[in-house]
Length: 147
Image (cartoon, one colour):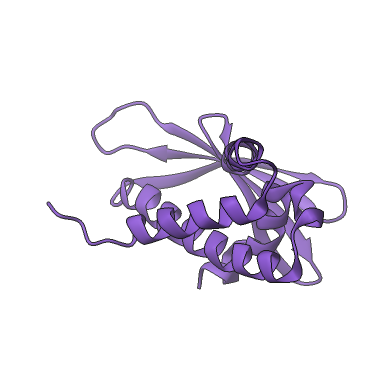
């Protein structure tokens, strides 16, 4: 279901940046599987925090032939400040998919790109080291809550 709405492979390639070309076919395939797992767990966790709150579309803007930006806010029932969320949407044929989400101005894709690039640089430029870290992180995130 997550893949139905998010351009996971395109986001994953963007996040890996120049390191995508350095990765072997096997590394690329494993990375994309782990990246999707990480995205699913991360987004489910983030969006569960806003369960019961309303998402209000503020405006949208078409940008070129195949992209749009949708400006929304999460309205809190406790009258706390609304959370600004921007969705970058891409079209491929008749299909629309989310390319990035910015919460309070912070891009998830850009943040992950910086984080993953840092891990690779610290590990002598090896994509395999990032894959190892992603295996550990996704296993940790999938553990049941102990509360």
